[in-house]
Length: 141
Image (cartoon, rainbow, N blue to C red; front, side, top):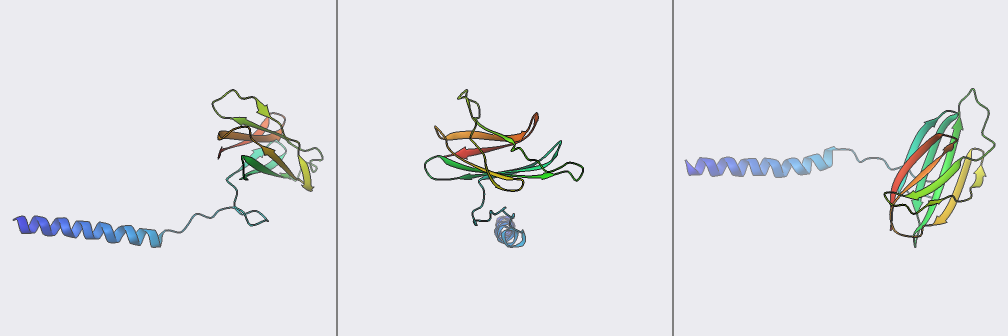
């Protein structure tokens, strides 16, 4: 009786061990969005705003530096946005105020901002036109 129980436990452990390795090989890796410079963003979001689709990507730099890339694709019914969207960064869960960095145009419908955050922690980047905003949270270290 004890031999049968030990054989069953050993068989289950072996199947579990082999199953873990097979699952690691069989499942496909999640694709990461990659920037033109070849670096993957720390956080990214695409949000539908009233005027079109807004893509927001956050890249962490050294010493609490953050690079924010914004891309806007207007609806076919709407003309291209000539004015940049509004961008703000705020610390999540703390009343640290809001950072509103200046946006630099990098092409039609594309903007970039670089800012140094005052402290490490959980931050939220919000971008959009008027009340319609896309938001993404990220950890700054």
